[in-house]
Image 1 (cartoon, rainbow, N blue to C red):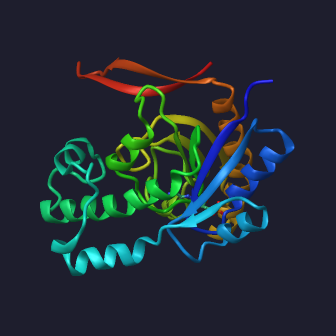
Image 2: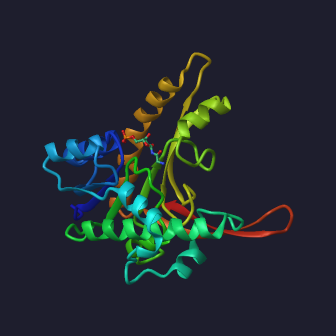
Amino acid sequence: MAKKIRIGVLISGSGTNLQAISDSCDSGKINGDITFVGSDNPGALGIERSKKRGIATFVVDYRPIIQSCKKDPNKVSLPDDFDLDDVLSKQNLFSSNAPPEKVRSFFTTRAVAEAKLIDKMKPYPFDLLVLAGFMRNLTPYFIDRINTDPSNPRIMNIHPALLPSFPGVDGYGDTFRYGCKIGGCTIHFIDYGEDSGPIIGQRAFRITGDDTLERIKEKGLKLEWELYPECIELFARGRLKIVRMSYELENGKKIEKNVVKIL
Ligand code: GAR
């Protein structure tokens, strides 16, 4: 039997995906154990769920950090290893015409919060970091400290839409309001953009004329609870490999992309 993987989980809300992952670890569907659950939100229900299960938990409350950085930008104490130019050269969250002051302020503020997250995670070594409804974008500062080997990414995210459609904070809502006839969920590795990393797995459901947004969320979540454990187990079995693909477009332009190959 292969060694169990150690899974760290970050959440912001109710934690039903966390529950599905935890159940799958208990039943052996995932060859792994959850080593910690962290949150940016002190009110996250998933933190209570985890405590009941005897899982180590912590909270890094982003809100007061963001408020105090906004109030007193000159007093912000940045982590020693933070390099704003490096982060700006890598980030893909803001377009090049976004106001530079806003972009700088976002990345410095986030570095303060992310350094605290990294600090809280230190006592719990992990092989895979799973974002299960974690509603904060992670920046290159954090990502580079977790993905120390760029060819072996180890931060997974679940998104409530069929990416690359409808990235952002309200995937099911955007799918519904667009009038889509099919919705779905996506598991992907995190990269420097918003919901843009290499796709590991997707699952789709039909949307009928009677479906409300609530019903769409129900259909989607049911699939999320199946898909996330399956993708984590693929990781645990060493079956996910990143390959660099080159494609030539019709206009002759060449593009390169990291994609996930399932071995
Ligand atoms: C899920 O629908 C997940 O796909 C979504 O948040 C919900 C969390 O539910 N994630 C995102 O929107 C990430 N951008 P849960 O807390 O019950 O697992």
